[in-house]
Image (cartoon, rainbow, N blue to C red):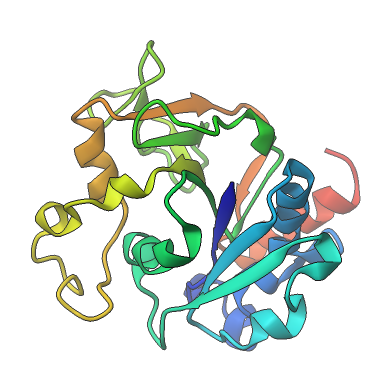
Length: 235
């Protein structure tokens, strides 16, 4: 299995910390956020990892190198000066990810979820990890049904953790799904992943699971500082 770490965002809510350092390279618990993911992927047996980049892209190879120190081979999918959003970023990285299902994780989260729990072959087009709704996102994202499928309909929503297994076929016919969304007609295209997921959910092709452990969306300096304190102490 190959993996993709989404690391192209500008981290605007994290400024001034991200003016010279991409958010995934900010230190927490004594090491960059992204290194927590690299260590977990290496322990899982993943050997090929793609990192998509845009903002301050040169900082990633300068800090991470080729991944050899973790027993990994890192590949960088550079999107240009402007990030391509989650959907466009994944589509742009597909040539480096191959035809098999791949693991994707947001570079700006921290989670104690065990990647080994993820199915190597999702039942449908993707399998997503969900968590309890944090205070900054009380409305959640998707509904986890009793049969393990995800739905966009319902009141009891959970928050997408930014961790999942995807089949490249999720992107077949993506233009018809995203339509004339801003950026979709540019080269390379820029669009969000959520419309593709919702379209697949309507066909019953997205499964998921509820992780009840620790998860942090490191979206503000305050949440970064809180996570750092906890990782250096005890939960």
